[in-house]
Image (cartoon, rainbow, N blue to C red; front, side, top):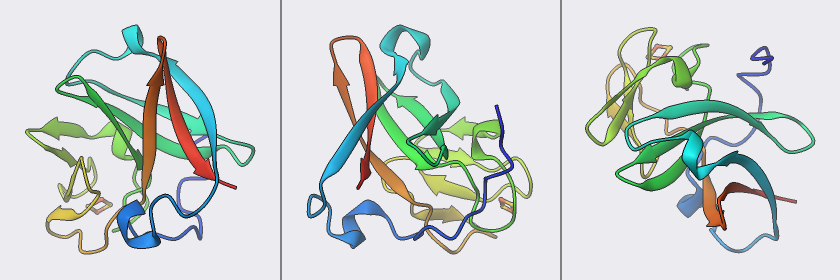
Length: 129
Ligand code: FES
């Protein structure tokens, strides 16, 4: 997959700060539930602009964060899940999986989060239109 689009100019505020639910969401199926066991994550590209997303199965629930670390240019899906955090592979900074908030230095800017739903056996990510 093409990860050259990692750091773009999209807003980095978490979904809850951007008025969750205010925009109309377009839902994209990105994986089957069986593809991602608890504690696993995968890189996916979502929507017409192939937005890079790190999809995580945390304790049976699915979460999606923008794949680009907000510190520098690193792919979070190449990192590690540690408890309820995802650790960046570059400098060890971390984000909370559920909120995208910074959890360990040198990360200080939240990573963008996305709404996720499961329909039948499809994991879907919602992008605002
Ligand atoms: S690039 Fe992720 S912590 Fe530095």
